[in-house]
Length: 434
Image 1: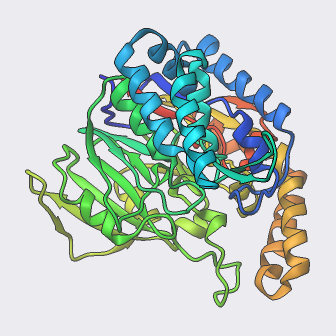
Image 2: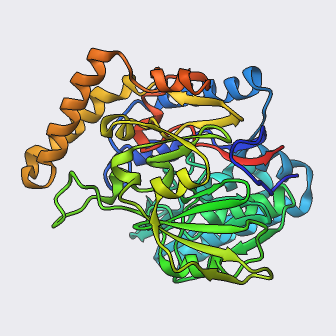
Image 3: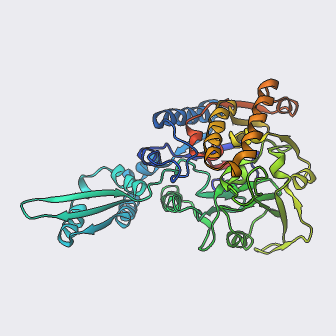
C-alpha cells in the first residue's frame, strides 16, 4: 500500500526520486553553504541519476516516480492541480523596488499564465526568485535584478523531506535553512499529485529529516541529533504507530573530531553510519554505533509510549534483536558505504565506496590544513584505513563479511551525486514495500 512501510527489508515496489536540474547549478556556485560535501560535475551527476533510475526500473522492476515529471503531468491533465501549482508559484514570488513596476509585473504575471509552460511554475518553486525593479527616467528604462533565494539544491535527496511509517507519511520540518522549503514542494506532491494524506506534519519548533528514520518490522529506529531535535521526537511519540517499540538513537559526537569543535556533518543522519541489509543483517561503523545511546519507548497504543528505564547503545540494542553487524571503517562510512538502498531481503544497491575514498581523503586534508587540531586525528585515522583496506582489497561492498552473510549486492558508481553528501538511500523515497 502506498504511504505505509513496515520494514526496510521488504521488497521495494515503488519509489520517488527527483532528477536534479538548474537548482544544482546554483548549489554548486557555493557548495559549502549549499550543504554539499564538495564540488562535482552537474552533467555527470545527472547522468548518474539517470543510471540510478534505469537500474531501479530495469534491473529490479521497481516503479519509479519522478517528482517533477509526475507533477507536470498531473498539472497538465487535472485543472485543480494546475490551479494549485500556479497559486503556490504566485505565493513564492517576491517583488521589491519601484511600486509601479511591481504592480505592472504582478499584472503581467496573471495575464501571461495562459502562455507559460507548466514547468515555468514548478521552476519558480525550485529557484524561489526575488524580482527587484529599479526605474530610471526615460522610456522602458527598467533595471530588473532577479535573485535566487535559497534554491532547493538538495531536493534530489528525496529521503529527507518525509519518511514513511507503518501508519502513514510523516512530513518533516528540515533543520537547515538551505533545505527548509523543500517540504512545500513535496507536501504539494503527496497531497495534490498522488492524492495521499499525511499521518502527521512536524510542527515548529520540531525539526527532523527522513534519513533519521528506519522501520525494522516490530520496531523502528529514529535518530536524534543535529538535524532532529527532542520536540520532533515528542511529536512522534504521540502518534498511533503499529510498531511495538520506537528506539531513539542519539547521534554520537565523532570520537576522532575535537570535542571542542564537533562536526555533525560527518554522521549527520542515522543512515550515514548505519543501515539495514536484510531481516538478519545490518551494516554500521562500530566506532559510532557503540557510542550512539539508545532510549527505548514501548507502544501502549493510541499514541501513548512509555520509556524503558534501561538505556543501551545502538550496537547492543540491535544485537539484542538478533541482527548480525557488518563493521565498516571510518573511511568507508565517510565514503557512503552504509548509505545503500535495500531492494529486498538480503539484496542491496550499494555505492562503490572505493571510488569515493580519495575524494574524501582530499576533502579532509583540505579542512585539516585550516584546522589541524579539529581534524588531525580523523585524517590520520582514515589514511590508515585506506592503507589497510587497499592491502586487503576489502572496500565495501566487496568484503568477506558481505559474502559470508550471503548478501546479494548490486554495486553502483555515482561519484558526482555523492558530492552532495549522500548516496542511494538518501536519494530515494521508498513509497511502497511488500
